[in-house]
Length: 430
Length: 119
Image 1 (tube, rainbow over the protein chains, first blue to last red):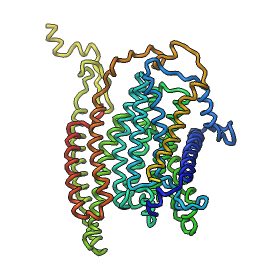
Image 2 (cartoon, chains in turn blue, cyan):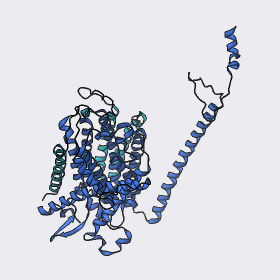
Image 3 (cartoon, rainbow over the protein chains, first blue to last red):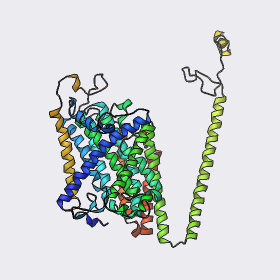
């Protein structure tokens, strides 16, 4: 499928697609909120919402209507214009980011041949990243405009977190572009016909899967909303439908990052293996189903993480992003690039390639062995130091105030009378 | 139609929905004035007075933003290189390794100066 298919749709097809994407995103949000509440409830031995509609499916719709009928409370200190614009930025950017996600191949829609994708161009993944960055403005401005302490802190934290994880996220795409030779989403899906990129580029996929949780502010990386520290984070001062818009934006962003993960790593709308034996699986309207199932897998993973893991501390979180994810993705890009040049440029046969791989593996093992020996030597030194420190008689008043002994420290009890008989006391007495 | 035009249509629909929702509550919601209600929320205690002219926040965030720009520029150079990788071949690889090396020097420097620590 070439990108020349795009840009040739008649206006009414574009309108249908726009309304369909809007409807899909809103319905998926309503569904995901209900699904999350039900699944987390099951994980906690509860039942979850089951009153409104069949299985409680209409619960989130009713919550939305209820929010519309609630009073809007705007703090006196708020900056009015920015306070109103912030939720609009957040929500509209969340919708717009989905424009380049391919939902399926070319189909015939009322006699017109068109792709199941709103639009596509040579830099569409870059476009998603750019729109996600504009979405951060909504959060920062919301925190700033509220004129309140907690939202300001939450907004700052949120922006620092999102830009930190955006680097790791963007770096994990490089290997995909390198293999696909394009940044267009439909071309990337087409390039995954032989094999999905989550198999051959597993480290990239893992880095992206971690970074996307940080990018969407979801548990265990939901520090901007840490209730114990910041009340509700950037949207503390927002109520009624303005709050609902932030909520909507968060869930749409979840869907978008899952859709992007599906597109870049899980073969997009292509049918998974046992189904792909059936010839008709990758044509017509069926691919939308495979696509939605894959997106739901990611969303379930999001919910599972929330139900399982406690929240990280902020310094641990930033350390993980800056000191692990970023160097790991850069190292992986270098490995992929070198391997590809070696394969393309030098005409090695399979045997030579195996020897080369064995050599590289041996080198890595030797370096790893040297590092581990050094690390264990260091640990041994530390242990000996610790033992020497523990061997000293414990002085509970060494720091100027009483401290209980740590495990392993010997505390010799001395009665006050015995202390009074110690030599230096005698000297003062004399 | 231009390939970018559908995005504007989607933006128009999304923004219209958002603006509609933002203004809707002014008409549908109740309005009961209460002085304490319009204070900034700080768990019930009197709110911290807001500083005039923006006030201060930790310089740490500024450092993070600067580091983000450094790495973002690296990424902006990596993307076209990755797309054209098979055409650039060995020459492109060596060039990019030198570039990544220089950025890594900066990264190592920041790491050693404890710029990546968050206290």
